[in-house]
Image 1 (tube, one colour):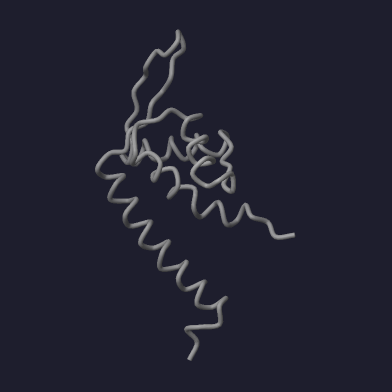
Image 2 (cartoon, one colour):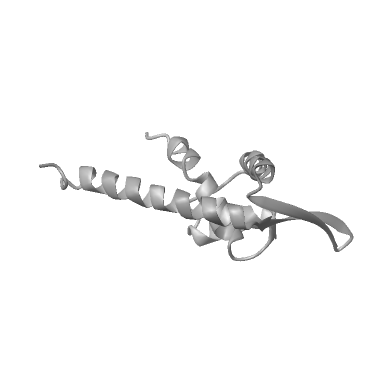
Length: 111
């Protein structure tokens, strides 16, 4: 059976930034948005999400803020302009690679 973890690893950054383009979200909300938008095909464990968020915070792609909701502290993540730029570059690269893979697997593009 094919190990899908390798495929996911290369797309985690892209899907996290994609859902944060819509609105600020907290960790669990990000995971649920990704799962919902993918029709359950892409499930991101919280243990995988948080290192990505911390890396994006350090890179300046995201900022965060604490908010109390129902007496619980939640950390919301916000996509910064630098993160939007990174997202657009990553998406363009993903599309380019996906098109190449499709060409190879569909038997086209080889001359």
